Image (tube, rainbow over all chains, first blue to last red; front, side, top):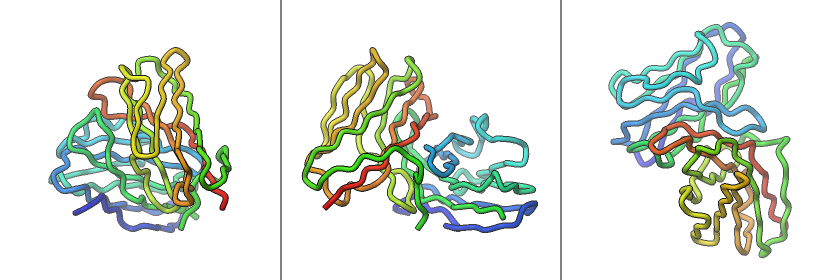
Length: 113
Length: 113
């Protein structure tokens, strides 16, 4: 597609539930990134994929968070047993290579009630 | 849409005036920097970048200045327009080819008519 697409744009879930957030990167972009943005803060790195593999998942806050990219294109960020502190905007970005800026999607706003 | 940066520092400027947004970065090894613009409900959008072997770079109506001695970046916007109203983030890349960016906390720019 023309840009990075994230769905859903908004997600409200109850504490303890499981959620999946989807990212469709720009066609041909091999690198894909997930960031999390809390209100009033800049985005914080979560995980980076090069192709199908997670090259760096050091930003994932704990083992409730997991992400996959099985075919090297679409990625899904999965959060188990959601907590109110998980409420944030989850941003996905993609790029052709590394070392230059990347293109962000509009994000998924997750609210845990 | 969602509000980004409710508690961010705010810069208010008159339409037509020049704006200067400042950012202190954290790592002396960072060698590539980007300014992003983020409008409410959208992901960060690339504005301009600069590498550490430069101290100034100009784009269309925007100029980025880099002072490595004091680890400081600034973004200058000439003839500020209402469409420039947004939150602006600086992001640093920790080394050549590094995929991870560290974002600053952001500054909200309000353009007064």
